[in-house]
Amino acid sequence: MKAWWVPPTLRGYRATWLGADVLAGLTVVAVAVPSQMATARLAGLPVVAGLYAFVAGSLLYAVIGTNRHLSVGADSTIAPVLATGVAAVAAVGTAKYATTMAFTALVVGALLVVIGLFRLGWIAEFLSTPVVTGVLAGIAVEIVVRQLPVILGVRGGGTTTIGRVRQVIDQIGHINCWSAGIAIGVLALIVAGQRIDQRFPGALVGLIVSIAAVDVLGLGSHHGVATLGAIHGGLPKFGLPSASWSQVRRLFATVLTVTFVCVAQTAATVRGSGTGAGGPSDNDFNRDLIGIGAGSLAAGLVGAFAVDASPPNTAIATASGSRSQLANTTAAVVVLVVVVVAPAPLKDLPQATLGATLVFIATKLFRGGQLRTVLRFDRLEFALAAATLAVVALVGIEQGVALAMILSLADRTRRAARPRDAILGREPGSDHWIPVDIGYPTEQVPGVLVYLVYAPLWYGNADYLRLRVRGLVDVASVPVRAVILDADAMSDIDFTGLQALQDLAAELREKGVTLGIARASHLVHHDLRHGARLGQVHPDHLFTSVEEAVTALQPHT
Image (cartoon, rainbow, N blue to C red; front, side, top):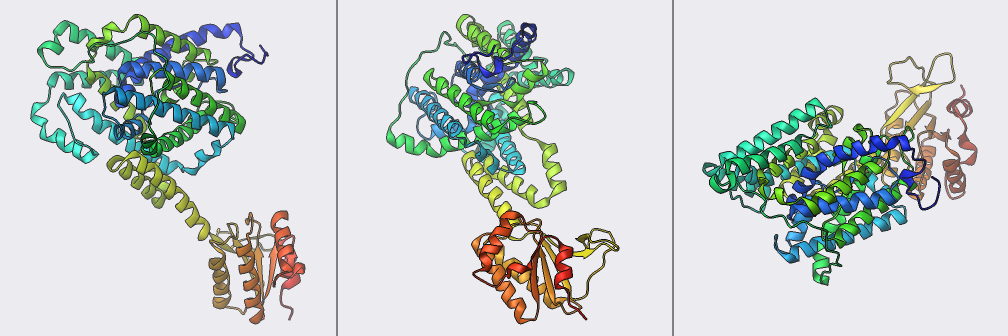
């Protein structure tokens, strides 16, 4: 199938793939139904809103997107952000809250479409892996704390993470053991199912068993177990939600945060979904963002909330042998049938079951192993991740994501402003120059200092590098008569860097020291030759190799 109207993920489809796609779709349904319902509760909406969001996201992405495995729907990563932001505008549980949530989905969807159309998906790279890990871990902590009252069957309360924990501790004597038992049992089923096979529908089994237990044992009426109550299913009602200008201004930070998280999580999910050795192209990724944005637009029109790429559901679809988006389309159709035809049994679903499902999802977001790996690699990067985790969990997700971006950029700026460097020596019997501290024997040419910096020369490190070279010249045991700057690792040079280089050349000349530059790229070479007309760097002191520079500039006795 090569017609223009055929979705990208169905081009080249083979009839022999149909059975695998249908089975994979049913497997996704078993996992998606309880998780999408739980995520809707996390967002402060009726459970059917999560199912509508899954249907809208899956169908629109299947038509527009390019990744054959990516699953799109309600996501527990952005649900707390949406809940916190919209709750500041409208009271949870009111019609205004639902309308505002749907309006937010429209705005987020529109922004994602714009980002995709203008090929701005690269903004996902502004968060480093350690701080992303910290953000997800902080969200996991907040999810668990929010679900504690639901799991324990207490009233709860509080507006912050610490306040919610205190409220739970104050009500510890009023725990509903039946609710706690249901949550523990469901959580055990999910964990055991995951250990047996990632595709085992532990959450769905827990959902069915807990509904049966409530019905048979009368846990709702006789033992105070909170259930969902009547579920208003059926086909979704289409409508265009609106909001006042003052509400839009108050939702601005929430919308930007959710949009950015969607871009970042989609990038991570696409990279990990097995798209091939070369990975997805930028054009494919930007089209994927358009597909997810269209899914959020559709979700907003049916009264649901913004959707995102789902790492666990994508992993399930891939592990189940899906060959195309027909698997997720099958799942969406089955879920829609459930919502329209059979929502009644869900009225006896214990809220503790959904709470346990969310706690399990939170354990997947809290990547303790990755945090330990970051700690072993670099304590400072671990500190950045820990700080992000703390802010997300204790202050707010929006503030945590903003801090994560600032910390990521600040850390990268710090590294570029104080770059690593090396003094080079010649390998005996050769013309190769290598760092003197890597464990191989080297020899020095008397009166020559060969210096390598692993960074571009820009306004942030220009003075630092100028003073660094001067300091090395001053402390040299043998008087230096020539400094060779190895520019092999210098990607570019800006005007401030060029001025600093000219000043260094002038300062060295006053000391009787000649400055030469070796192995500059053609771009840096051009900048240096052009800038030499304005200052002290002589064009004849640009060399193609370190050995050539040393031969030309070394002192002659």
